[in-house]
Each structure stands twice: as structure tokens, then as C-alpha cells.
Image (cartoon, rainbow, N blue to C red; front, top):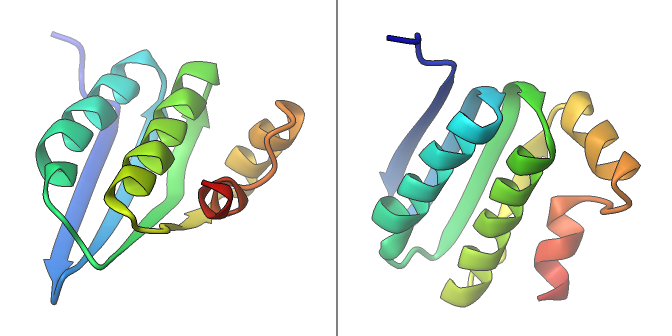
Length: 107
């Protein structure tokens, strides 16, 4: 069995959701994000914040997973906030995407 290399932790408080993503956001991590969207983000929240500063690796599949988070929040009518590591910001910039917060506010 392969050791787990990606984690999602969340805390709900007063209609707000705080989410921390840590580890390698690759194909396996993206599957964790999909399950998180299907379970936890199936409920409504007044505000959602994502702390992605603990992500140590991200590839294009991981970026797509983050974009799915943005899309799900838009469907919920919530503009999420993101705290990103410089690693993620470089990858987004190289892909021509800018920041996730900017993408969220455009939806």
C-alpha cells in the first residue's frame, strides 16, 4: 500500500468553512479533492477559505482540481479566498491563469 501523500482538513464554524490542503496535489490528491467537493461542499456555507500553503507539489491535474473548487464555490454563490504557496502561484502564472481569487471573482 502506498503511503498517503495528500491531506485535506477542514473546520466549520458559524456558517464558515476553513479548509487546509497539504502535500502533493497530483492525480491522487485530485481524487481527494473530488471526494471533498462531493461530500463537504455539498452543504451551503456563508464563506469558504482555502489554505494551500502546505501543498508541496502541484501539476496540471492538481490545478484542475483547484479550479473545480472555484467552480463549486461559484455554484454555491460563495466567493472563496485562497492562501497559496509561491510554488502554486508560479505554476498558475506559467499556465497563464493568474490567481484563483481573481478567477473566483470573475464567475
